[in-house]
Image 1 (tube, rainbow, N blue to C red):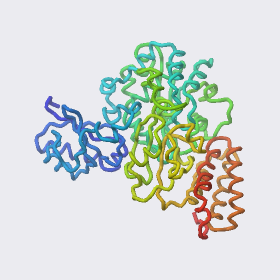
Image 2: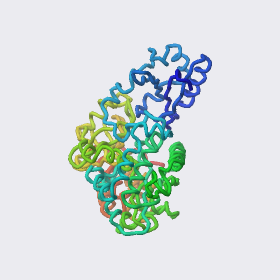
Image 3: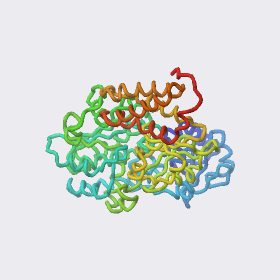
Image 4: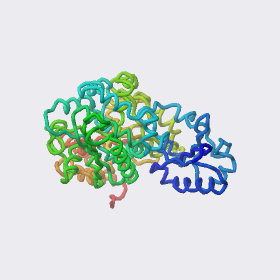
Length: 521
């Protein structure tokens, strides 16, 4: 491209592709060629404003300006309006960084996504990539672990366990072989942050996992990726090859003598593989069945060796911590919830997408101010936080801050940061039935409370919905939920009662409606 060419950014993220981004990119290329204009099209990640996708940006001396949502049929009109020089058009949004959605965030983990070419290592370096790893390579493993511990980083996969403590356990374990495993089997409803990061900034995940390997003395790593993410698979595979070509991965990381080899392994569509021990079983080529703990994976994990198992977002937070310092990260957030959380906003919402914010922001501000309320325009009735096993909150509980302990105090959980909004047309008894149905389908089958309890739960809910001896069946429902909570081997069965009981306790009227036919599903 000549020095006069204009950079135009069209996302290659799966969400943007699903609404025509590929056709838009081709239309921009065709129109520029037909008009004899020099344009460099860069396929970036999404900025997270999914209701504006495909979001097209043009780089000008004063910064990027955005247009969206753009369809292929709009491209000729954009050129007519002079959008390559920031011309006004019906789809004009102004400077991207000045948009309210962007200005109100604290972009830490997601600071590069939407800004860079995801597969350009040069672009990654020019935006402070690898600075965390380079600093880590000057420290001892114990010093790295201490920084992660001091940052207050907690697992972003749902459990919220302190990352530094897990790393210290693996660091202190004596073994000839240790492993780093990334749980990228993102399966919770309403969650897509892992996918966005892997597609939009794959080198960040590679850097974070490499820092973990250096910290604990691991030489091999695996990214366990759900098979439904073909775009993420392609991005990660290409990024790993590029990292190996420049010595970022391999026998000597950046020439330091630390060996770290990384591979992507595809899962087979089982929700239970989001549970770390079931994931390890699958990674070893076995049926994905939950292991009893102890021993914990940090001591006896993959192939019986000490293993760090963390979520995509946990690893991705580490390079920033190493670059800027533990205290800088801990300065974000509140209480025991430190740093930032990528919040995924979906369901019946006007402006859905990803927002990265410091812990502590009230749910109401996220849903009503940033999300714009329901897409239907009807009142909010329920909000599910934390995936399909998370509690249903009422509109009156939306002032609860996004914080592990604050949500736990109202018998809810933060989970993976997914928020799904429902308006006042939702039937909460049906939602409770869905929780059981989901568990019955996705259970690994190892323990009776989960395997049998979820099936019996569907049957009990069918009787309640049909009006069959409701008081007796509600009593059975409560007893069954207590059994599953107390006796299930893992969180699959143990947390299924959370959405059921929250629906029953907060929306009791839906469990006592006029009789309906027994479900035929």
